[in-house]
Amino acid sequence: MKIGVFALQGDFERHGEMLRQLGVEPVYVNRAAQLADLDALVLPGGESSTMVKLLDDEKMFDPLVEFAKTKSIFGTCAGTILLASGVTAPVQRSLQAMDISVERNAYGRQVDSSIRRVMPEQAFEERTSPGELEVVFIRAPIIRQVRGDARVLVSFDSQPILVEQGRHLAATFHPELTNDTRIHELFLAKLRQP
Ligand code: GLN
Image 1: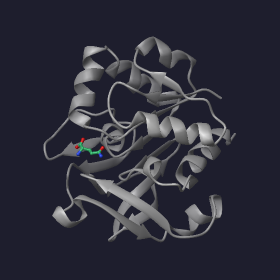
Image 2: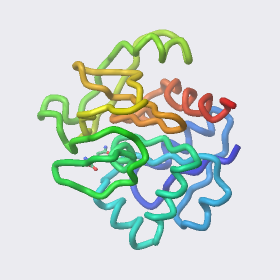
Image 3: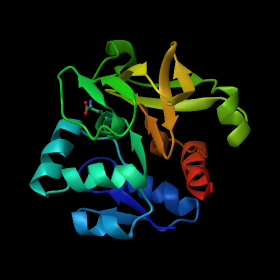
């Protein structure tokens, strides 16, 4: 299984380290040609508007839209903004890979950058292991709408913060910044599903 980590911008190294910890050697991706070999891609946190610009500059935007139609993407924070089908505050182009709408930088100042503890949905615990989850928010978006067969796996303050749809997984927080590897494990488990 070949897993790429988008490495033009953002917190890609921590994702790479976490994948390595789980026995997967990541491929750092900065060119469209690299996508062809991959089974999955991690889109890290960072600054989504900059990522859109860099994807355009590197002629990677449309190839990524195509990639998402058959391969898996795991987005965290800015990566989730890229996966969404609707982005506000401000309106921004995205890959339209998941039936979620997000509002950028949507938490008030208290939550803006903070560490919280939440109880995941049972469906998450059944597929990983039970227990509270530490979630790190850094100027996080809020997922305002979840449509179609997109499913909420973890919420905070009644708002979804981890959502899956088919092959894709989207977190508004930064699982790569904690020692809890369950979110990455869940993504790897999804990839192994027939
Ligand atoms: N605020 C950033 C954005 O809108 C996302 C922040 C993050 O990825 N930690 O793109």
